[in-house]
Length: 312
Ligand code: NCD
Image 1 (cartoon, protein in one colour):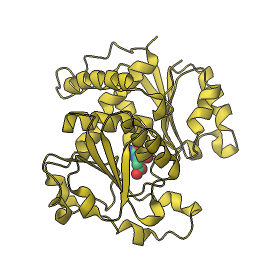
Image 2 (image 1 turned 135 degrees about the vertical axis):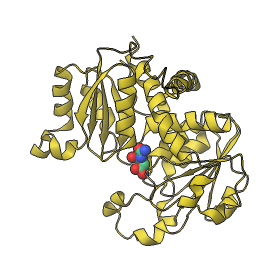
Image 3 (image 1 turned 30 degrees about the vertical axis):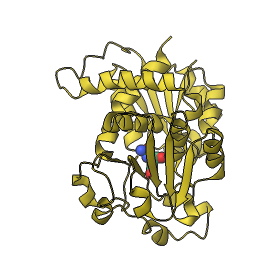
């Protein structure tokens, strides 16, 4: 059975395969006449979206991806409140019961790190990790690589700046795991001191000979960057980490019109979204702004991922 749980499980052949399929899907989706030409591929199968944490893009892009593949889709967008979890049911019991209804794939988002692995341990159908707390977000990282490849034209020899909440950001963690598979990657981390990238990722990068450095100067970091990956300051994770002043950390690094002077015209700005104030609205009109297109690519990439987990 094929699960998607952890970006470390992927290899470059897998990513190349997903990128190739997603390219075909993306071109077809861009044209109203061909948008529905893949509905035969998984017709009759059912995708179950179980989200215990808020989501717009991940949940809806899986929804659209499944529809474009001809699948039925159901689930819950507030499983923490509207499922039996509120009555005290364990994740394991919920997954075991859902499997009795015979969905073909379950997409799970959960606030606890490791939840997708726990679900996979008891599931009789493939589990796709749609984000497990401050752990990982492997389908977002796959989408991020697809975006970099499509917008910058390559996945090797890149200078990638990661800005914002690197401590609780699961997207940057998964992206580091994936970038480490390619040659000549240079990463620059720019974050408030309280929200620096955790040591496990730094150790992983060092072990895989990825050069990285931490910087407190956005200006310096942006010079010569190919990709600028901006993230939101994730206030919801601060409750457990008292002593972090949201207003202070969220105003530290803002990508605004002034910062755009330091950025090459060929570079691309990505963001998993949602954006709060970390990218000023005026940046949206610059050719480097790729984040809205990036979100759109989520449907094609998730079509490719669903197809892969369901391939026998
Ligand atoms: C991210 C997430 O949920 O980890 N969003 C997403 O899936 N596109 C980032 C965030 O919430 O800031």
